[in-house]
Image (cartoon, rainbow, N blue to C red; front, side, top):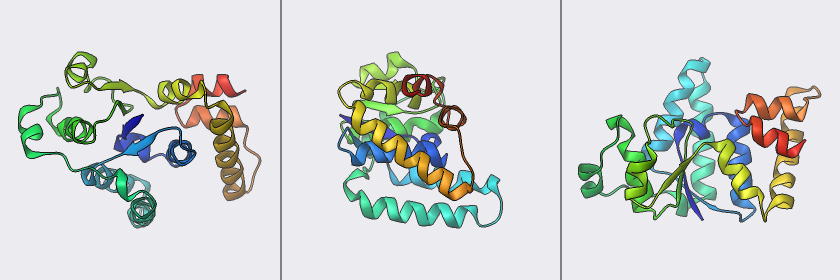
Length: 179
C-alpha cells in the first residue's frame, strides 16, 4: 500500500515517528512531495525560534532515509484537479503521481471522498490509517509504538502514560486498540 502523508501528520513528532516507524517495518510505503515537506517546515515556526531549523534537519534525515518517497506532482494533474481548498491540490496531485492508495491527513473537510475516489484514492486520518494497518501487522505496529513511547519518555525525562501520549498525538481510537 502507498500512502501520501500530508504535512499535518508529519508535523507532530510522536505521530510522525509512529507513521514512519510503521513504514520502516514494511507495512506500507510512505509518499510525500517537496511542497508537503516545505509546509511541515514552515508550520513549525509557531513553536518558536529554532524550531524550523530542527524541522529542516529532520526533513533532511527523512529524505536521506526515504529517497524513493518523494514524488513530484505533474503539471497536468495540478492544472486539472480541484479541491475545495486550492492550496491542497498539490497533495492530491502527489497521490496521483505516486499511485497512492490513500492520503493520510487530519484535514477531512478539504479532501472530499467523492473527489478523491474519482482519482482512485481514499482519505483517512492518522487514527483510521493506523487502525486499518493494525490488522495483519499488529506485532510490527505495536513494536513501533513501544519504541516511540520509550523515546518520548527518554526525551522528556519522565514517565508518560501511553494512552495519554497517543491521545495527544490525535490517535484516540488507536490508543484504545493498544491499551
